[in-house]
Image (tube, rainbow, N blue to C red; front, top):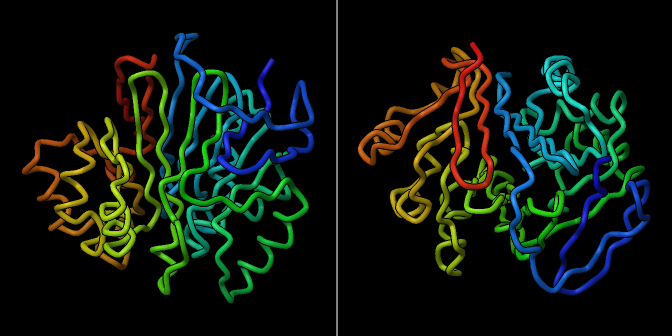
Length: 284
């Protein structure tokens, strides 16, 4: 049986409708001690933009789902798994990240929607919000923590306030499973990165999901030094009109001897971890 999503918030107990076992999220003062119960996998799905799926023994998470045209590919991919208590997290409200989630809200039983709460004046955003607010819709902020099962936690690192650029309003989150960590950045650019650095956020991680498809406007040297990953994934469409990922970003990763995995070249990327070590596989 899969667990409902357990929410660790510093200020409130949030009711979660439709969760298994209990109707409420559980407030915890500390994270449950790690006791490895098996592997989890993180999937960077090969679509035209960014889509990441976290498969655990408890709540599963879809972080971004590409453009609306990518929804069928994302649905077909994640439907291979025993999905329960699905939580979706649009990193931000640009259609190339959030658009694919609209049809997912129509076609898959989504339990929770975790959202930055920023406003964006597009037809796609309006449709997404209208449908998402029929679910358990939670506006999140820096410092919020969510237990996906007894051993897997995600912590929200950003935003702490709203920036003028929607890219910088991206939900940056850190997944922790035992000794393994992974940071997800959406389209977080330099203002967002600098804000986390200035506020002393612990960014050190094993795997980085590179910001803004490897654009030169993200992944500053200071940010990359603070993150210091062993491996990096880049969610990016093949032959895209923006030239992503940019050569400057690839060079920064290569100079630091960070292993690079790209969905445009490597297809679906699967990261498997037992909470101690991790493996990365390519599914071309």
